[in-house]
Amino acid sequence: VRQNNLRSGHTVSCGCYMKEQTSKAHKKHGLTKTSTYVCWRNMKSRCSNPRDNSFVNYGAKGITVCKRWLDNFEHFLEDMGEKPGKNYSIERINPLGNYEPRNCKWATPAEQNRNYNRNVWIEHNGKRQCVADWAAEVQICPNLLHYRLKAGWAVGDALYLPVSLRNKPSTRTT
Image 1: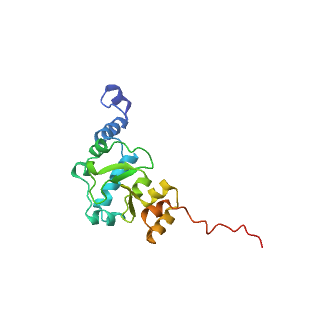
Image 2 (image 1 turned 90 degrees about the horizontal axis):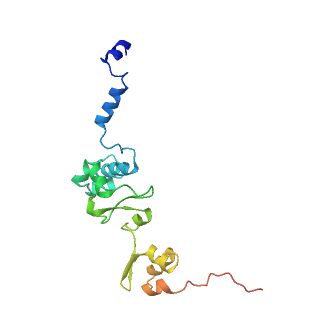
Image 3 (image 1 turned 90 degrees about the vertical axis):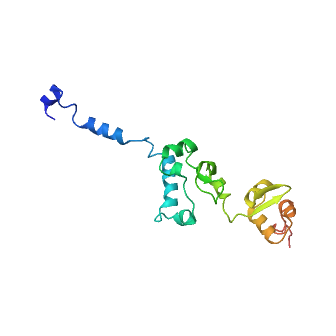
């Protein structure tokens, strides 16, 4: 920039002012590098981009993103809030439903794993949980509980009968 143009007021800056103003004009929310924004972008991609690796499990199965969220990150942020932590991701409460405010929440990986259709669900005394949750509650190995149920055990027996001591090392001396 010529010095006399700066002094006369004909030129306001060296060019950085214009760059700054252009940046402000194009900036919507300034959150494109946040994990919440990345989650929103990935959600849209897996539902609408056939080249996305996850499209086969989402968009190809008819799962969509609601109109309110599709082209407006601010609406998504308003409805969902910031992602609570790095281990959280968006979960559809009804796994057959779409991405929309009433069907989504932030969930941990453990919560997400409860939504798989391959989970085995057990109802006992009016309480319904998956095998992993029952096993944690009664403090037995999930694989043992699953094995007992597959072998035809009654639910109460599978849950509460003690683990066999058959495989305990022998204390007998010869």
